[in-house]
Figure 1: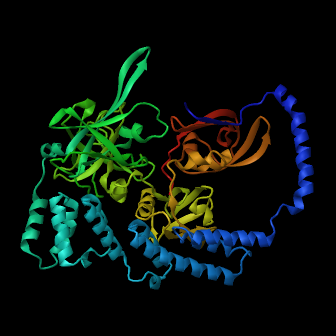
Figure 2: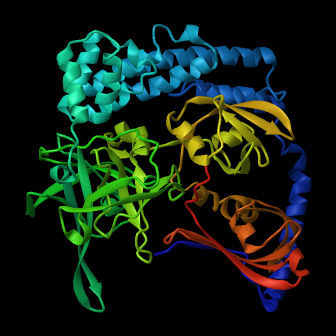
Figure 3: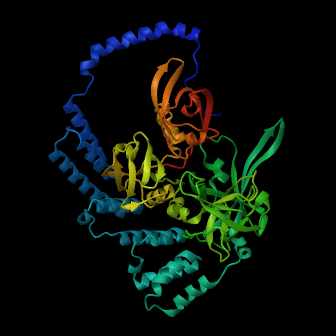
Length: 611
């Protein structure tokens, strides 16, 4: 059943007449109560100070003591604690962060260790990280995956080393051989670049060069693909039972039987709201009549990616690349099972890049034929490089289809091997791209940005010293970090430059969905529809507003709304089943001579402008 929320329903005059005396009595009661309890309502300053210290103590003792630094910074603008007391808490947080770093390494929590290390160095506290450095942490993390036999994750983490050139000859030869054994062309190329700068054995270098020079044909890669089949039982349609099934595609990335597909193909396997029957199988190209049971290992709803496990050893494995320069017009191939027709290869070109089709990142637009059943299949270049994961097409328009670039999946590939849903870091702001930076449109309550003191109208000019102009660039900068990690933002507020310290937290799947429960409607207008509104009057049956700002290129802008347009809010509906929000208003547009007209604005809940 669809969950729907409606704000400001109309109340008839007769109904208002009936409830008016009750409301009047309630108002008098509240006024008298306020008079009686008002003086004691504000907490005692000492109590507030004790609560602040108790909160700091909890933060310092947590898994990420780095969270305490942001709280300490905010308390410096208050008079609850003295500067000396806050300095002492700062030292305690530094000591706790240093201890947490060592504990994380000892317990094998390398992702947490990297975040803590970066946070300490960001505070210029290098003396507190001991013998650790980023190269050592990433190398130790990669070795951990090697011990598990997890080649894709091991090579992915190894290539994150800032100083890949610091690898010893022995380690370089070991990982180059490892990459060759697992057909990881991307890792082979990066390690070969380092090997050629040294006098390593010619055999290894020649093997690497030969591997990269060999162009795999799409026909050879079919052995590394699979048809993903989800049996959802029987669906009743007008009294007639029909098989209910979902068909998609997938491709192997690990010889142990791990394969990539789309989340939406296997959603019924992990969606807690699904109440029906669901069984997941995989069919291989050489034995399409055989159904092999599969299970979901990890999944990412935001990027529509899932990792499956089957008990087979594939004949061919793909490797994700970090290719970012994909020019329109470049030829590509797609392999999949459209309509269940396995071993199907289609070809086309890249039509465009940078399509804002997902909540995070961007998508490739391709004209290769994509039909139901292709979802989750590989998109490959003529030389065999895996450049994307097919995930959607528009049935009404022939030749308009989309794929997720593989470099986005590289950011969270190791997390897919961990059971459950992938978590991404976020700041908690919706922004508008401008030539000078990101203009903050909306700050989510209780988010990292809210705790750091950001507000609408701020201009984010840099994230960690990097000037960014596209939202996808900002999201990329965050994806390379982790929850609990400190970052520095450069801002301009009222045309005055300032900085903020912010600690990243887990991003909710739908940032605005939670906000509907406790935020006034007009607070959400900037993020949803691209306009700011000021409430100018409220009646029991309607609320009145004036548009104070419209963001260029937004839904409100395309609808013709402009600053100083007065309007009455008639309805605000949120449908969480179809993932849409509707706003119905009676507006008197200034550009139309203030003639009254009805306007409806609609948008998807999963908007793409959050950092």
